[in-house]
Amino acid sequence: MLRPWNEKDAKWLYFYARNPNVGPMAGWNPHQSREESLYIIQTVFSKKETYAITFKGKPIGCITLYVHPDGNYYWGDGNGEIGYWIGEQFWGQGITVEASKIILKHGFEDLKLKTIYATYQKQNKRSKRVLEKLGFKYYDEVEKLDVNYRSFKEIAMYLKGEDYL
Ligand SMILES: CC(C)(COP(=O)(O)OP(=O)(O)OC[C@H]1O[C@@H](n2cnc3c(N)ncnc32)[C@H](O)[C@@H]1OP(=O)(O)O)[C@@H](O)C(=O)NCCC(=O)NCCS
Image (tube, rainbow, N blue to C red; front, side, top):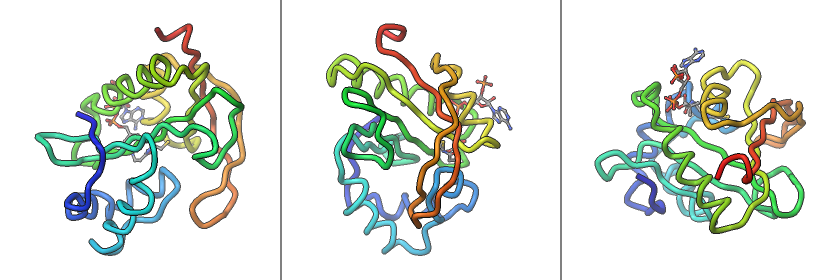
């Protein structure tokens, strides 16, 4: 279900990421072309702990576990943050919860992270629900920067390894 991205995925990434209901909720702009999607695979999705969420071998979304100095927010040493999105055609089927379980287990067991955080825009009830289903609890409101360096506030949730494993 999770695997690294490769350049051949650009076609599928563009197919899902051009949808304006997906990127802006996660802090990035809808993709404008297949070339832009390829560039994102080469520069952003090639980073550590970034995986394609697949269905029948084809990518339908992305999940990342950010560990400092990756990510745009410092959660303290030994902690991490997850971020995710999937194509709208696949919403509401529990896929993000399943993908998150895999990456959380990896983060706590293999990378020995203490706490994993996640943030969402206040109106993003779907993402809030994903995190609640995984056992995340309310942490605080935090100020982050989007890809255009505009500051915005998000709700942060946290999950401790000792509560999860
Ligand atoms: C947020 C997102 C990743 C959720 O993915 P998903 O695979 O649909 O999530 P799941 O199916 O695992 O769970 C969604 C939950 O939200 C619920 N839900 C759906 N629409 C909802 C709404 N409008 N209000 C409240 N809850 C809602 C679903 O019923 C489900 O909960 P349930 O199983 O208790 O019924 C997906 O909608 C997405 O990619 N959105 C755009 C990008 C984004 O927001 N990324 C996250 C940034 S923080």
